[in-house]
Length: 272
Image 1 (cartoon, one colour):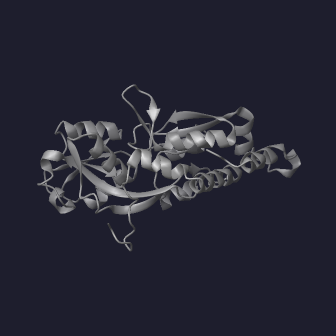
Image 2: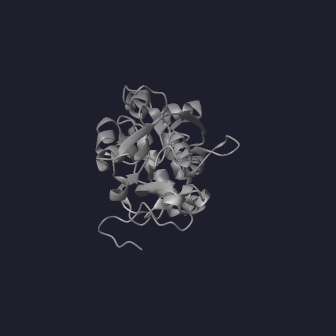
Image 3: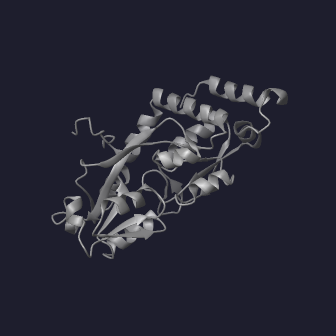
């Protein structure tokens, strides 16, 4: 990847500024450059974006993208395990510098922190067992007494499950992987997932399918979460995202993990 030297020049210029020219609050970008490490909060269990492979190694869309960010900054990336339920307080408690785990931009999160420019968009889909694909085709088919809808706790999947289902029973799990395991085991009937995750899991595991994959619900932008006060770091991240999109690296990463699956259409756009 060819990242313009202007990125590092900008970072070095900011780091070299006299103390009197900077805010009294320690600058996050300056600290990252000085320490040589960017700490990234990530769930490590969000399919496509942040997950562990069979060998236990961390991989995903965000890992590939963050590798290019580390090179642009000239620092190492240190991954810190987080959950969506504790993400905001942990960010404010300085447990990591940024959070990146395929997260959607929401008003609630933006009231506490701030977001980078988007690098993807997705919506919500239901994952069901392949044996049930003729049985469940709509949300109404699932929204019946006795049906259990799995979701990970603390994120948009939980909000979707509790908002959309009135008669079925939303069932929370500490992680997406535990929810998926109970779906496979037949302990729940369906799982709420990001559209990207649903399509990825269905391609990887023949035991499940994404229910009506073109009928995506609640589309949102995906972005990097940053503290409000860390504006120099936010500026760098936005420049980096623009650069890897211009140079085609972002498109290559999308193709690697999602193939030809198109980004979710907005309600006003045609669905292919």
